[in-house]
Amino acid sequence: MNRLRYLTIAAVLATVHLLLALSSLLVSFSSGMGRFDSGGDMSQLESLATALSDALLSPISHVQTMGLSPPLQWAVVLGNSILWGAVLAVPVWALARLVKGKRAAF
Image (cartoon, rainbow, N blue to C red):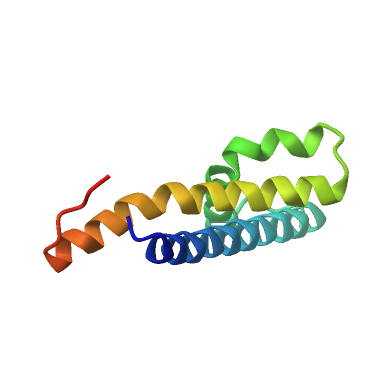
């Protein structure tokens, strides 16, 4: 496996994961607070953002209630994105090799 290409793919996927997770969490939280203030019903955007943030932050969502320090919580969120990027980079890298006509060797 070409390590530089794999690491590049993993870094891009980890960054995309982190941005999606944090932006969906922000939208979910801000819409929820707006709904709390107005007393309205949950919108489709809030429902979608909540489901997306739950899915992307699912393995580490319980860490927020464990009393860890904020820097440690951010490290866990960043580590989660790095892990997802590393795992998702393997099939993306293999697919890219297949498209180029090379055999993927694991």
